Length: 266
Length: 266
DNA sequence: GCGAAATGTATCATTCAAGATACAAATTGG
DNA sequence: CCAATTTGTATCTTGAATGATACATTTCGC
Image (cartoon, rainbow over the protein chains, first blue to last red):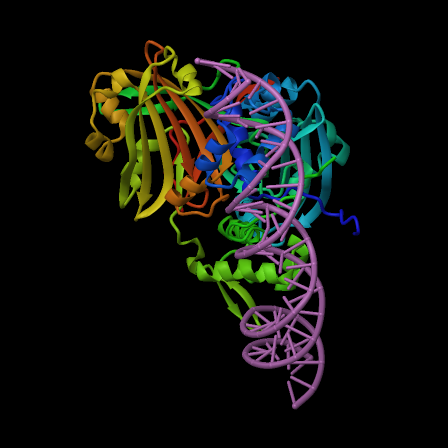
């Protein structure tokens, strides 16, 4: 038999979903460290899959160092299960904080080039058809572990002010403001997608794993589009936090954003 | 070292991902209505799958009424591709607005019962071990189409103030404030997961489809936990929007939330 | 009208996750 | 020690998804 190994990827499968499901539950605290997971037969019922499949999922969790399985006893959640650093960022101060907080924050520039602008980005940035933009794809790592995949588009004229090297060391917003751009407002949209072949590889997850998808458009004081960002985050290493207060009175009560959140726990 | 290699069996796997990928691109505007998608052979390259698989994805898109395929011509994005209502909600005024905006908003109560509180919820709400909570699972539909799946936990004592019927017709926060609870603050966390068997069925998506996951804990003025919400949203029918302004001056510049966003489009 | 390019159709082989089943081995509690 | 419960191991079957290949059909531009 030929060692067929060129494309070994943990494809999403039922077992993979059971794996992700259990991992989610452990991470989110449903099964705190030290507690026992339900028996394999219980899991068979709960997930509606065969025992073989459940065992595959458990094997993956074991290999990931999150559980210990003992014959005759059961499956126990280990302490280190939660040890994986998970960044909790407030929706407002995304990028700057991360850099500061990261013990070992690192940026890897995957692509840097000038291309004609694609339609949706063009419209959002308010550029004329055929305009050129500077496109960059960056990967953010902490302690060598990738957690975000950023694709940015900046109008060519503005992108002139910084070089490829600048981008590898300095936050984009700092670069922009340094060169006189006066940022004013931004709109973000948060959603969810699946990892494609490429993004999966970059972020070191399985193809088809869930990712947080964040799109942002930044405008300057004149209303010109300055940056279009399409970010993908690993949900197990990143979470977006939003703090709210109840405001208003009488009939019109609503939730108001809290801008300076207390530092996060966990 | 055994590299776990999994495969898929539900719903088409690779083809389903190609389908979701293309649909995402269409919805997000990469291929505006009227434009042509890349040829099947191009897609084969881009996604690294066989033509059979690409065609399966295209067939699904066609059945969904998003594209028209013509022999000899190619594949065109139809106008109605974007017609599916997609709700854009600001992070602050989530629930109230949706109800108001929905032409045909509907709530389906899937479960309503009292259970002993589970660990992670217990801790977040600050309840003593063994406390009982009222658990409800609701499905939100607009025009008969499900778009969110809400699981809430409310301390039993507080939940006394409203009935099962109340919950089917009135927003939870209105019920709570009506009965004298003084809501004060909330913390939300946004992430991404995959649809499980149950949630997939309720939201009418394929098992393993990506979902936006939002967790919220609401506290009253005394700091007591009032509600724990675990919400799942279909990313194709829902998006979370956050508006920011650049504030501060000199060295300390940061993004600040805008609280009253202009009404949404699309 | 011809050829390039696109989608449509058909068939076959391969791979491997998933399920079913049976039994072994380890632990715990009474 | 025994019975119940739990995880570990092994084997076989099967079905779905994927990929490879070949050829047909339609459209469009030259």
